[in-house]
Length: 112
Length: 111
Image 1 (cartoon, rainbow over the protein chains, first blue to last red):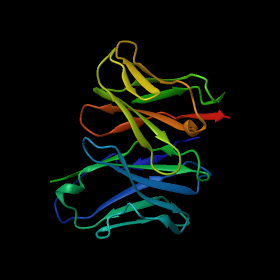
Image 2: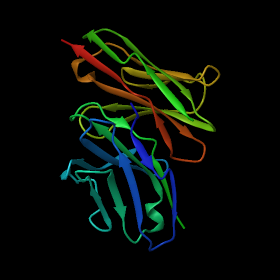
Image 3: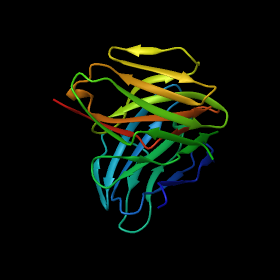
């Protein structure tokens, strides 16, 4: 049973470009959470999705960030017009319900 | 491939008991070991450990790191029902903020 998969593991973008981060939940999991970890800080919740629905996006910046979890395929966290401050590690976690979350290996985004 | 393993997977105790949660790690270019408490949504940060043998304490919680044996423990004394949660540990690499999470220990404290 494969764990939570995230790709790419490392992503380098120039300011103004778009970043797309993918998260494939564990088999059978229909809940996905995205977190951001900034240097020297803890995990910060961004968004919680179930299949085709955004349940809670209270931690998501209002502009440039969006997330989706389509019926088929991975969950996508999309950052438009990236800025240097977006450089961070982005983790997703999946769950069968609102209980145990299993974390993926993360994507490190570096904005030049 | 970096790996973090936590034990036990789950634990049921009664209020007032003391519990010890274990975390072993294999992290290339290891920098620190972090403990989190997860109840509802985002994990809550508990401790960051970078040096061996130095106990960190916060109320009834304490944690220590052994960099020679590559493990850490989290102790909770005089447990309360509010301690019921999933406890996660994660190894951080030297390059910065990449974490490898363990599978967590689910703690249930009964009244």
